[in-house]
Length: 143
Image (cartoon, rainbow, N blue to C red):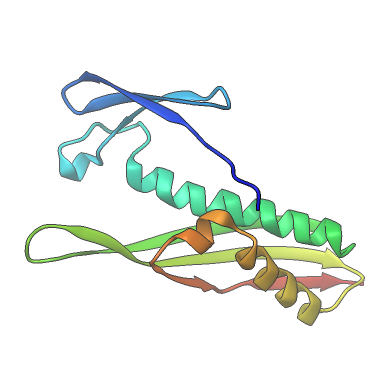
């Protein structure tokens, strides 16, 4: 069994503003959402969570298309997360919904649906969350 380590550093800047540095070279500011006394226009933990799910799933779908030799024409995906807040003011992501729009050539809708399932199975982030994970694809198959 292989083991991988990912590292990230956060530093407080001032007020509700922080800065994060990731091992792959990305540096950026972050804050809480403005509705939670944060700063507008920078990454929030909620945005980062949704981006992590969406980008990881995206990479696994691309991998599945390559592995099973599906001619992918285009792929885009909107990710939506539903957060519930409890009486004690704690909150969790209750549901994550991905709505990929996929255009492929010379294959079947059924094969693409199987690739979507494989993408979830091999998505580290999607498999690591406890929120309900749903996919509602729009698939177009070109001749």
